[in-house]
Every structure is written in C-alpha cells, then in structure tokens.
Image 1 (cartoon, rainbow, N blue to C red):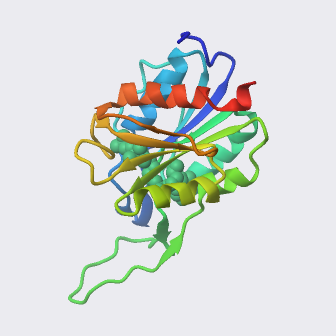
Image 2: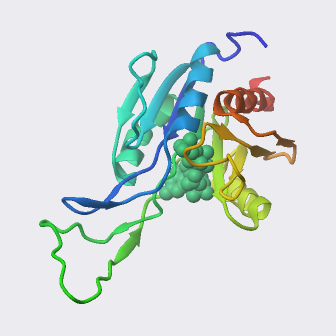
Length: 222
Ligand code: PMT
C-alpha cells in the first residue's frame, strides 16, 4: 500500500502498563512492555500520520522516533492526558494494559511489615476507552485491544460493544509467543460490522502493519 495512506490523520495511542501506588515505594501493575503500542505508533508515523503516544512506565527508547510522547504513571493520569488530546484525534488506539483497580488510599509512609497478613482495599479505576467511547464523534475511529485467558472471542466481542470500538484486536495470554512482552504476537481482529481477520504468529512490527490495513478497511474514510 501507499506509504502515506494515513497522511493528515491524527492518531492517539495508549500503551504500556499503568502503575497504581500502594505507598511511596510500592505499586500494582502488570507485564505490558509497550512493544505492541510502539510498533503501531511507528507504522502510523511511517504511513504519514501525526502520532501522539500516551505511555505508562516502559523501558523503551523513543528518542530516535519523531513521535509526541506523554509519559504517565496511573490510570487517572493516562485518562487526563487522553481526554486533552481526544477531541483533535481521528483515530485512537487503546493498546495500554490499564490497571482495572487501584488502592483506595495511598499510604503516606512505607507500609511496615508485621506478623499478620495485610489486606489492600481496592477501588475500580476509570475505564479510559469506555469513557472516551461515550464522546466519540461520527468521524473518529476507536480501536481496542483485549487480552483474555478464557472465553476469548465472546469477551472480546462484548468489549467491542461496551466500549464503542470500531474494531478490537484480541491477543491471547495463553498463546505461546503472543501478548505481553514478546517481540511477536498472534491476533484475531473483530470489526463492529462482523468482519473478522486472523493473523499468524508474526513480529509485532508486522502485526502493527496488519492492524493498520484493517483500520484502512473501515468505511469511515469514504
Ligand atoms: O505491551 P506489550 O508487552 O507489547 O503487550 C501488548 C498488550 C498485550 C498489552 C496489548 O496488545 C493489549 O492487549 N493491551 C490491552 C490489554 C488489556 O488491558 O486489555 P483489557 O481487556 O483489560 O482492556 C480492553 C480495552 O480497554 C483495551 O483497549 C484497554 O486499553 C482498554 N482499557 C481497559 C481498562 C481501562 N481502565 N481503561 C482502558 O482504556
């Protein structure tokens, strides 16, 4: 395809994990490396788009890329950064693994160990994709990800509806070489209109290109 098929498009990409503080030295998080999100960002940039990344804490080097990067820690910070960008965006890709829960209170001092067990009171975090899905304009596209361990297709399709995505990319946490941290991924893509696409296990750079090709197929462009 043409190397500039996304030229003039503004794209927001969330990526990486979020970190939810427990106390000044501890947090709740997950294994997302940001590799999938960065591969998508680079593909969009190569294909002419203006790319804005909002990334949780990752150890990737963005310095050689011409990308605008906002670094955040928590889900709330990620939400604030995305909300500010969202009205100007044509396409939003939610590749971040946002923590679903955060400690109800952050302890001011390091929690001391004693002989008893410790319980943490957790509260639900904001669902960034769902909230922005409520204000999505008719010419904006929202692309979701789903990482599942069971009832994968059913759960992914439920998220497609609930979060007002135009398409959702399902990666399995159980598939060898796919999902978190790996340099490869294997995905199933479900469109809102029922179309489906399945990939082989491929480097995340190639998976990103396939995802962009699928986005290009969405009829909002006509
Ligand atoms: O970063 P890598 O190591 O390369 O791994 C890539 C990945 C596995 C993290 C990525 O491909 C992926 O699947 N990201 C989404 C993982 C996830 O949290 O899925 P979910 O099923 O919990 O969330 C569904 C969708 O809602 C996602 O688009 C997610 O970004 C979004 N979401 C979820 C919760 C929340 N509070 N806010 C959100 O925006």
